[in-house]
Amino acid sequence: MTSTLVFTDMDGTLLDHHTYSFDAAKPALNALEQKQIPVIPTTSKTFAEMKVLRDQIGLNGPFIIENGAAVYIPHGFFKQKPAGTVWVDGYWCKAFISSKNYWLKLLDKVSKEFKDEFTQFSAMDIEDIQEATGLDAKSAMLASQRQFGEPVLWKGTNERKQAFIKAISDRGATPLEGGRFVHVSGNSDKGQALAWLVAEYQRQNVQKVNAIALGDGKNDIAMLEAADTAVRILSPVNPPPEVKKEEVYTSTLPGPQGWNEMLTQLLSL
Ligand SMILES: [Mg+2]
Image: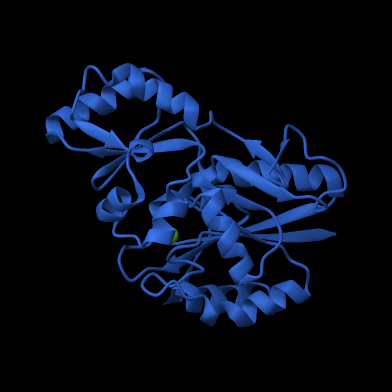
């Protein structure tokens, strides 16, 4: 027997890039629910954001947060406690990197060298974060509750930013540059988290797993490569990510339309 697990990115994949709507994916979502195929959000979003969003979508299985930093598994999804997990906020949690406190201490160590050249999420109030990110108050509040990393808002020159990136990399961080922010965190990715959950599923269910992954961006590459079936969802803003795999599917429609299109085809829903 083969069990199918669907791992999916959120923004631009299950959620429309512009409107964040998942309406167009509802036929496939309903069919997957009927077939008891888990849909596992695999996202850069935080635990706080995902708790709200999975209720809205109507998902009740595991989910992967902060770009693969941790997997959260609801009680009852597995018969036994998943290996290497701890009980957090009503879920079994498997973390792959150090929690935020570790990265805050690391930032503290370099702060003298880069005095007044950066600020960081934990030092900003919700209005500051809103101004820097363009998020509304509620979204900014949820986005600020990061557990496994700390976004740094760079205020100095680009040259000094590169020096800062080197300084924290030398101390063991894996910083990610994105626009005005440098995300300071450890070395995790969505692919590692997918592989762990698939292995645990096989360990507890003695079935072969067919892992299907869907994504639209660069931070989905590791997940797409780790899956049995890789599906790139057409993006209105960036070209399909380069995936090193013999067979890669690409949707003809964008976002949730493409999500619905591809899963309907692949799983004959
Ligand atoms: Mg995306």
